[in-house]
Length: 377
Image (cartoon, rainbow, N blue to C red):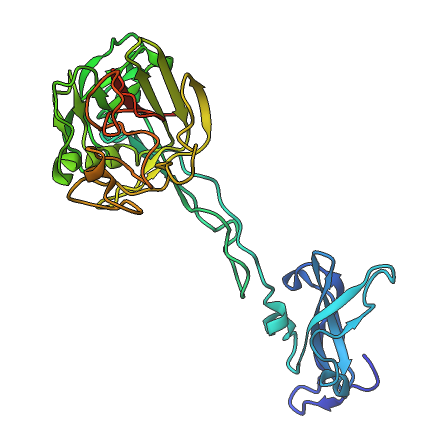
């Protein structure tokens, strides 16, 4: 026993008892809870705990310290402390206490712990609406004492296709049965679960395309009001427009490509394919496409920034979002007009004739046929 300890004689038992402060004593450890070393302090000392940051590592020093130093070492005091003078360490916390083995309960001992993700759960069963989910928890470990939360998502969802799953578009049908022929099929929209008949092109460019506009003989008048363009019109096995509200809903399920096909009055053909096709919600139904992927016999929809439909709202003669005049009224159509267009897909059916109001692509000569369709990738 140290000579500085105060010894008292218990009269009843005659046993000398040490009144020295007992402290944990460890240097450069990773966890204060793991310290088992012990030290008797002098009568002018207190227990201390100190955290130091060495690179990405947090270390702890514990032991006895003169009382006057307990109030003179500020937080964030920089210095060379610990095992190696080659390692620059920073004092982040310095705390003293005056009861036996009290350091493990001090604020410095409450080390910041950043959260880490646990494992993902298994994917849930595929629902009747063609999706499944999985989750994970930020508990390996959970964040403690001001530590950072886990970055990223705690839940994920993905499209799944099974024989019992409701089909949301023509690409779903193709995944279920790669031998299906082009034709009319029934689908269930992914958000409102509306039952809808659509025309599926199962041959062109790998198949699985859902057609939302088709014209080839002028049998259906496309000079319609906004309500008709929103809800759809025509005959799904002939000339038709699917409906903006369905197009928006169906194109909200994942990543889509857009394809347009044209036939000129002389029989020549062209096509154009774009990625990242998105249609915003109503009433604007803003049109967006990404990069041009494949094309033949067509100029780009991006050609002429004042005429491109990209990022434009849908305009009809009674619902004008054109950037200048009402282009739908002026050119007898309905489209994502800019100022005004490089493609008047829903203009007057007048094949082979020069007519500014005609269904035409990059010129004013009427086309014989157009098809617009999309596919989930």
